[in-house]
Image (tube, rainbow, N blue to C red; front, side, top):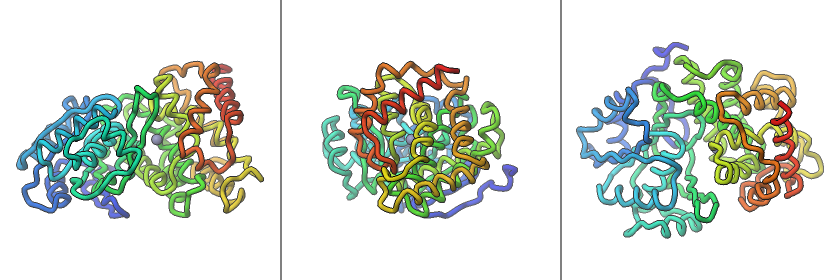
Length: 398
Ligand SMILES: [Zn+2]
């Protein structure tokens, strides 16, 4: 597909309103005013650390400068401290609308800050407390999300991941106010994304696509979304990932978005549950951490039988997996697993650490996250430890 085919094209799906097309700057002012419901909204832009270096940043800001505009740079993973600080900025600016421009961490930070900005005194403690309850909606400024990486799907979900490093835990902030009202998917915003980052994001899409299909909370729609994400990425997976062309950037961004919608419905499962320790304890990026165990969990879940945790039965789970196998254009679960492994051990990624000595601890931590309970085949510490050790064995056998 040529860029001209989808320039300024608009696709309206379920909430959030989703606009797909290049030159986001051309529609930015209109989208922001519509979301805020006023002609002169006070706008805060929360962007990632690479923002100023991107060629598209200045036209985007120029389009928004007709409004009272405040720009904040968010770097690193969102923490209770950084979210509290951002929430104070949103309050201080009296923002009518929050525009997040970045990868999953930046969008999560912006979403959480918008939700916490209704607190009279946002603090790290109030962030943690709100994660334990759920975020209120009254007075939360609407959020507009412009992803600059494919794959996290944060622009399509009503939750945000916050990293509590002191406690070595991942927190989840949930609430309908966190769902962006508008997602602007501009493939040109991916230009300049480093290859390691891109591969990690593609792995996150693959994991979210499969998990959104096999989760015990999956429905017909999330299965379809997950399989479609895989279909969009199938050809990309066989190519090098540097210098993506316009059509490939479009496919990657759309696949990430659809997989994000799949998990917004179905939640994630054990790959994501195990990924949090791999990120917190071993420093792996989110997508790399999810992708590392995905092939092993796929082989494990494909053999589900009377240990099925989905009340609809093992047949439903196996047919959801078959649907993804077919969407990916391969003929077996094993071929799908090999496709995942080829990407998970791409030379573009930093070498994975030896996780075998830590496998039991990672397995134990994973089971404490409620999403582990979404897995369609029963898991326990022993099963997850074996999966993690097996993943590492295959890695070291290379
Ligand atoms: Zn993810």
